[in-house]
Length: 223
Image (cartoon, rainbow, N blue to C red; front, side, top):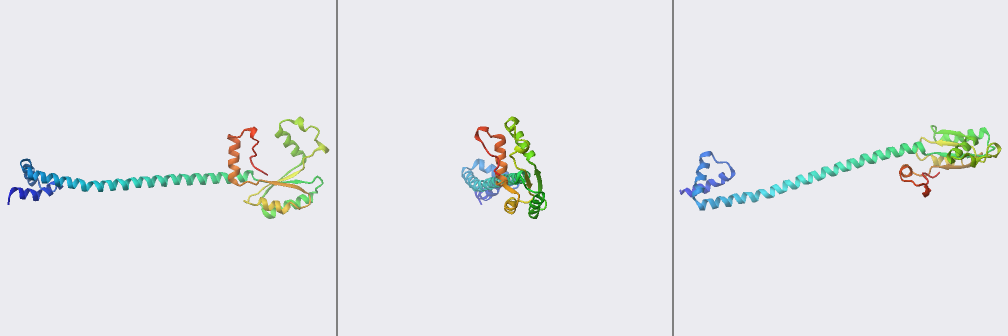
């Protein structure tokens, strides 16, 4: 067998790095002197490189897709956490701010007030009910307006502000039921209630606090 035939059989192992040291040295010495075998070796080497390229590209694509998927998962997780946090804040704020205000006739009797309270407790036994007298409402209006002179002369018998019951419920969506329950009861003059949902109330208050201009006349929440 010619030396070239032997080298051409061994050149595959030489290219893969699997030859023993003696065989490796034999092939290397032959390739230095034989242009024909060296050309065959270069072709084998080039073929191997081309075969490796698709595999490398495929691995890169897999790695890139994995990173992209992980990034999407992280972003979605952050958005879920933010949404849950906003929901918690919105509902806590709603429970603290939402209310029903029942304005009372001037000649209402104490037993009628108790009947109204009883009707409210039938809907929500944990409801918080606060009584505001005519004098309380006059004082509140003076504080809101910041100018007591504008309401001078409205004290005593001239007080135009009605007494009221302010109700804060511990149950969601119970304010409408309360309004329907007591609006026709004796001694009730009128009723107002918070009519926005928790998210609208929260974002309206944020807007009013950070972006509101008095010239716009924005109402934070409707009653």
